[in-house]
Image (cartoon, rainbow, N blue to C red; front, side, top):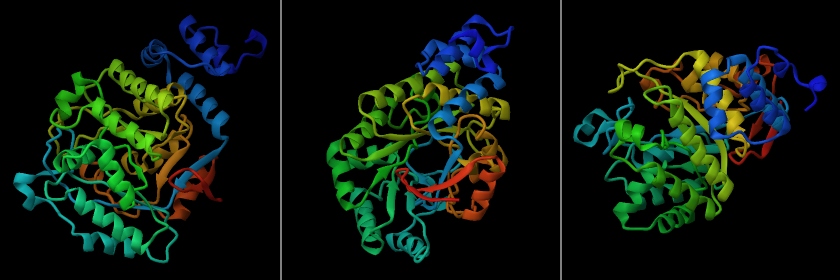
Length: 376
């Protein structure tokens, strides 16, 4: 890259040599290394990583910002696991404090959207010992029988691992069973942070990072797509964040199948980590930007607006994000119970479109697999 045509962000005479080298890689379309990512976390300012991330975002998507029309079903918040960061679940021993929906209850939620142009139902919840693979198979079949066109994205790898082990099925056998019943794709939840130094402290009793990846990779080999998440802003170091992204980037290189990457901000209300301070908005934006720079083989970067809040999610559109999830319609409690800004997470299509336009971007409704439904 000639000095004369160097982008403005790289022409700063005070820019360190290592940051200049990373910036040139980005503008040349080269992959940054793990060491480069650590340098960005430790040395780069927000304006620098924001400019690089926005460049990548606009190279991939221009101003297009995706959303979908979706709703959530949370079958239960009763759970056999006790993750320290979780404000949502209630241990099975205290299940009277939680909720347990029947198949009819959940089918009634689906029927509430009859005649509406939603394209996706997102099904995740706690790990309930009595809601086994046969139970959820029947739920999937009934949803598909009622509304065949509705894309069912369901069950974190944590839920699936428990279902399969209880049913004495291999991962492939379990996924095939659910796929045949109507499961279309997997969400990205349950990834948290893969590195055992952190995972054992915050979620030591559930499936490990290797197991999470194995479930998603098997789903990809069966022709199913999925998303990937990362829980950040708690007890981790930059090394742990990069290790997590590295494992996902490697999996995408080898097998493919991930649609998008979704960083999830740790919230500290009403959980066992309430003594841990939350990340600042500057740290949030920097994390999103570095994720966009590093995750070069992930087509989409999503900000989950109910967790960040509308204005902060809008801000991420300048830091590499090109997807704001969906309308949701007040059907999730996972983050509102943890103290997120959105205590009643629901936005109409018109509100989401306006939010995106106010950020100078182009709103496009998508389906779960990023086929464009409508441009606004």
